[in-house]
Length: 160
Image 1: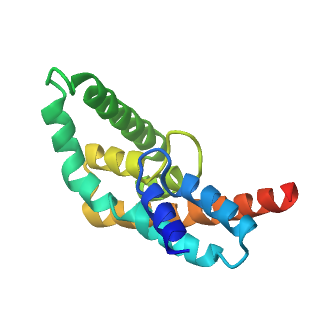
Image 2 (image 1 turned 180 degrees about the vertical axis):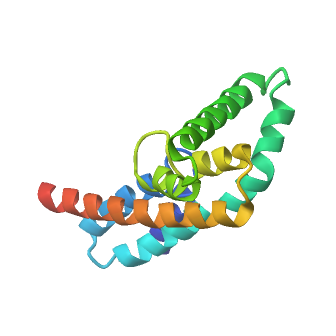
């Protein structure tokens, strides 16, 4: 059981997949073994998804800018940097003064290309302060977790 919880913890830290994918895996574990707790899975996935957020905020932009002109790293680093800038600018245009709420919803609504990694990178590029960025990402991760847990459990119960 420990390895299953560890696996969803690690998956929830992976960019793009994040807690959204980890909770689908957790729902599968729960469907196969009802002793596997979706509540604990939710908590573990939230922690796993939030762990990289401060690191992304503080260092990702610097590393991406540094690597964007390197021969081997240049293309993927430039692509990530451009995606973050594009997401940040799009968020800023739509949000105006409600940037905190917009970031929370950007992270929280489980759509492709949104999530804590992209949202935090966009916020750092926009120059949002650290504390509001982390709080908005946390609120978004909690929201995405509720949505994905509900949909995953419902989906597995319909299939079963």
